[in-house]
Image (cartoon, each protein chain N blue to C red):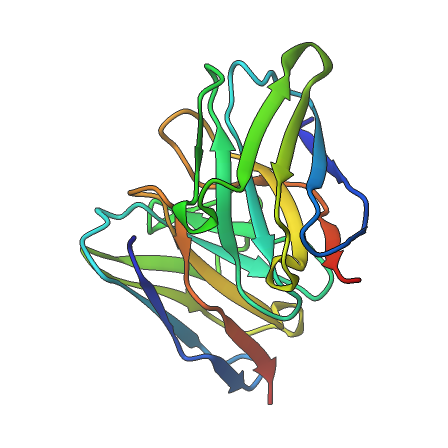
Length: 107
Length: 119
């Protein structure tokens, strides 16, 4: 199985700041990577697919990058509504696997 | 409008069998695969398994042979059955739909159903 190592586990940042979340795959996943946002009590919501494609309706302050085994999610101009837990997911190989999550809070 | 909604028993006794139903609308099960993902309370996401458009299934080997996924295309329902439940199977179970064949990111999720394994 492909292991997804996500960091940091938690993050505290101020409104308007830029934050980065990283995901490292245990092998090359050829950009078959998605990012999700999950708010408490809610289902995950897709933000990014194919490593850098923005899902319809997602604010442009979210962006994804990376290739091979290293990927990142960037959130510009942090807003209060961005408080959530973020997960990466690889879909290059079954079984699909997720990162352990990054809990984002406002300072 | 694509929608998915899970239904389940809520509480299951240890060693018993879990049966969940995912009701889908807005698409055909013969055109899009449905996946199950679970999340223990306060923890991360685990992909459980899928039923593909042709009806074949694939599941997480970590669940060994405890898992069965099936469907009724005429009723737009997908079923998950898992036997020999243990406390570590306590989780929110989500059904999701992938974007399309070979495009296995998940834009569509059900609300999830909490399954508690306890005597």
